[in-house]
Length: 395
Image (cartoon, rainbow, N blue to C red; front, side, top):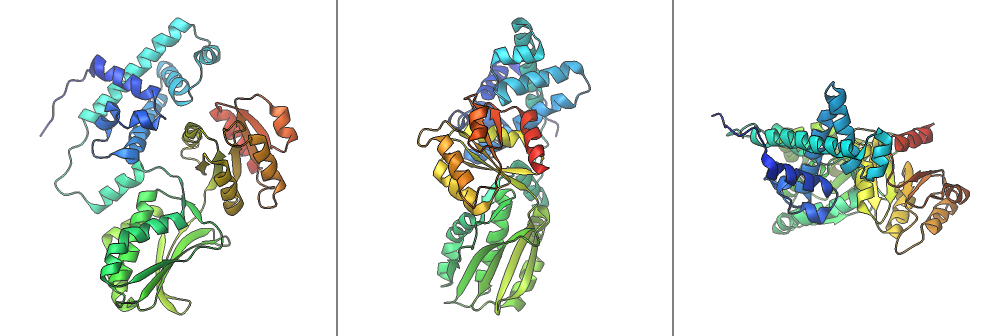
């Protein structure tokens, strides 16, 4: 059945889009935003905000794909005003526009974006009667953000999710901490569901009053991260066909490019779920979460993933445990002086070799370099300059 709709989004929706753009990285404001609710009515909370923001940014990118100088300028205006959040005087200077022309282009850009979003909302494909496993998993994968996930924290959450079933079967599930922090860049919902499937099936095919152990690991020689599941009394002959014939687990693994082996691990029956680790982690220490969001946006579809901390102590600890490719550091934070953090990073044996990029509103590059920073970037960071500096670190 065809659904007819008014192709004109109307002034109300255009103003709603403008408001949404103005607080795109403000979680509190986005929670009750009407555009978010229209774009992703089936999602709520943080997941809905992230999905809606991704749709907004992807739609803005469409303007850059049109072979038109006019649309390209509209894209640039939207990016610099709402995504990079640059001050109006800076944009006027960079684009050589008068203030009048700038606001004319901005209004036009918001209108075009509103029309594209309106069409997306009202011309969305109807939901089929039967939704395939592949479709649902693919949708979840595409809507999730590709951020670094701490495997130990993830496994603790999984144990909580399956605790009810484990208690019914009188199975004890224990988490063995890794020797070093294990992180991976993969959409969290997909990885979590794959592990839940794995653990649930292991519980079902384990003898009552036995134990299951979960341990994350990292193999640098093979460039993989993984999770080992071992059990006291696991029936591998029954478990193997249950997993190998499960279409859901097969597609979850395929989506993540992961592998699952079934057999003995250190003389115990067990499972080994592992996936490649090709991404480089950028650790951001900044009390303003919007900075990490912006950097993550800049690095979309690159080989980098973002691991962010608002608490400097947590960021320093993560840097020592995970050895990221580079650290982006703010120096003006409420609870600890950033210059002290810089010196702490550069004087500690576990972090002294990690490049540190100081990103601050304080324009003090000479001081940053003299205290050990590898480079300096004014805040808000410029996308091109950030990519150039990261490329230099690769050399």
